[in-house]
Image (cartoon, rainbow, N blue to C red; front, top):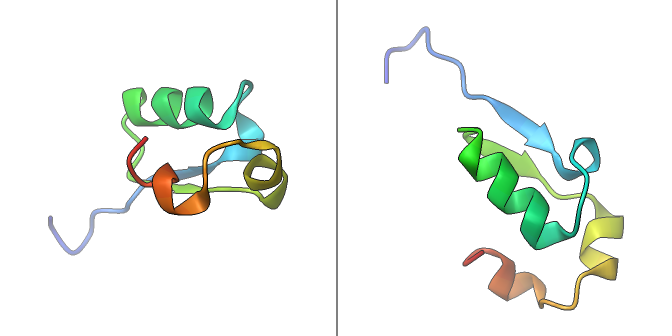
Length: 54
């Protein structure tokens, strides 16, 4: 990646749906990173360690 390239990221609060739906949509949109908001973690039945695999 060239030094002038910038990574694109988005926060889960900006996307509607459940956490798995949000992460799938974010990945499909081609973002490089995601900031997961606390509320999404608390309302999600998946344990935080398993979220990495979504």
